[in-house]
Amino acid sequence: MNWGVSSAYGWGVYGRNLALAWAQDPDLDLVGAWPVVDELFLDPVRRGALAPFLTGSERFQAQLKAFDGGEVSMQAPLLGCLMPDFAMMRTPRGVTLRGAPTIGVTFFDSARHSAEAIGTAATYPLIVTGSRWNEQVLRAHGLTNVRTILQGVDPSLFHPAPRVSFTGGRFLVFSGGKLELRKSQDIAVAAFRKFSERRPDAVLVSAWHSPWPKLATTLDASGLAAPVAFTADGKLDPTAWAAANGIPPERFIDARLTPNPLMPQLLRQMDVGLFPNRSEGGTNLVAMECMACGVPTILSANTGHLDLIEEDNCFVLTRQGVVDTPAGAPLGDTPGWGESDVDEAVELLERAYRDRDDAQRRGERGARTLSRLSWSRTAAELKAALLEACPP
Image (cartoon, rainbow, N blue to C red; front, side, top):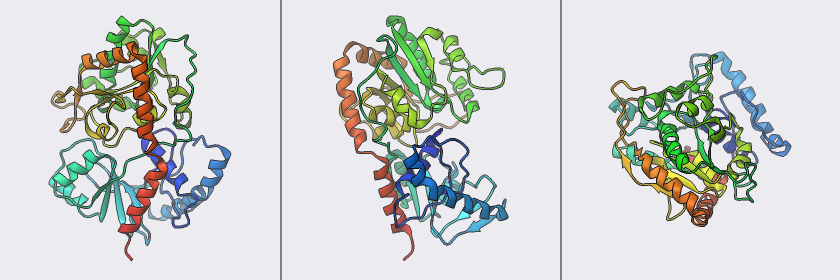
């Protein structure tokens, strides 16, 4: 597997859960090309189950040191993260891996790709996409070597449970995902500011930190919010950014970089989740985990979110405009994206606030939807695709 395992970012959570799901599988012996660089926050039983993967990965990475900057062909299947141009991502030491076969895994954010990129994508026997939108885009370019396998949640962690409030009954609005234009926290902030003017008991709870804080500056291109704030040492400062956008500290909570296994404890305290995202190459892990916990969730009706939306299982941002970023904006090309309407987001926050029974029913339906999307299902589907693609 040519990507990392972690509790701090999406690809890492994907890798960790695949490794756990396949740990006891007699047909598969998984090793990773990327070193573990953060605490995985695993209980002793899970850590013990993952031990063979971790030790095998360390041996494999030690072998790769002899090929720094080069290319290695292996007599084993390779699951590899694809870059935006569909080239295989290199290992941290600059090694290009080739497998037998090489299977690409992708979560891309734009519908527009060069002929060269499509030509590269056509060389793989199989590309696994994280959303039906991604698959449709590739098929529209003439590719047939494509299969959608949705990501999952760990139902032992992310599930409905009795809500415990530590804020005196205040109305908690959750916004998650790494801070960037694509994730649309500028829309969330603008909507919450308007909403909280009507509902002074509302509090915005953010989980916006990531290992890539500079991506947050892409939000400045929209003009919907004040420039993103950073501390003197270059770290993201969500509280200062919220204050610059008219949300005072008493109406804002920064969840900091909460490890993924601890997120259920946070999510189950929320009254509503707000995800007006402009684009999701996958199904948005944070939104999936929010729904799995039974939290009423507001989703933008675009790209990968469409794989989560079913009848009355969430609140839907149906007004999706064309994303218009200034010439030379950091992310530039944005075909396929959707611009959620701030006023519609305010309306849906109001609906969730006024009719708690309806919101609860939507949360329950959302949890039922996500109960079908477990990591074990993801791993089983990916294993089947892997074995089908392998030569006899």
